[in-house]
Image 1 (cartoon, rainbow, N blue to C red):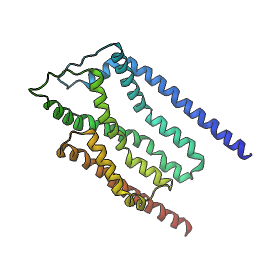
Image 2 (cartoon, helix red, strand yellow):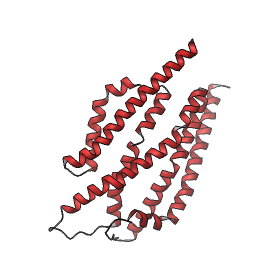
Image 3 (tube, one colour):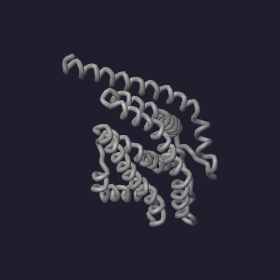
Image 4 (cartoon, rainbow, N blue to C red):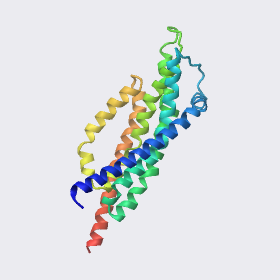
Length: 241
């Protein structure tokens, strides 16, 4: 097989996997549209407020946003599996087995991050901001503004919570080392401080409440990277012996 044929086969395989993900996402998106009312009521279950809409476009925005986010969350296992299956031929048998476990782990960590943002961070941030209007404004929230604000908080946290799994995956492939993560720790911390300032009220307590889990996640990721790297080195030495 020539190099050109090899590249063409890989591109065709990549195209098939992208089509598989796209079709699955479309099916889940339709299912999400049919379930938007239940999702909407579940999200607002404990919220003591009534949301309004300013026009038909707001209603369409709510339907599409809720359905697309739910479809994306459900597609995470499929997306990660398709990525794993695409790179599987380049992996060793041990690496194939080890990296396969990251598929459910990524989904679990994403859901954990979203839950952390929804049940802990968002209520604190929302109550703080609403309290600023006491005695000054008559508050009325539109559905679009409310959900946009909600998703700006919980989705970044959902993605950040996947950091340990991503680090383990890259370590397994030999693309990441603990020394590299320690070297750039201060830059990562600075980025996390900026991110926490963007998604929390401008007070130290709220930002600290978000920063501490983020810092812990990064330190846990460094520890996992060092642990996995050491284990790989021990395995390689035992094979050489």
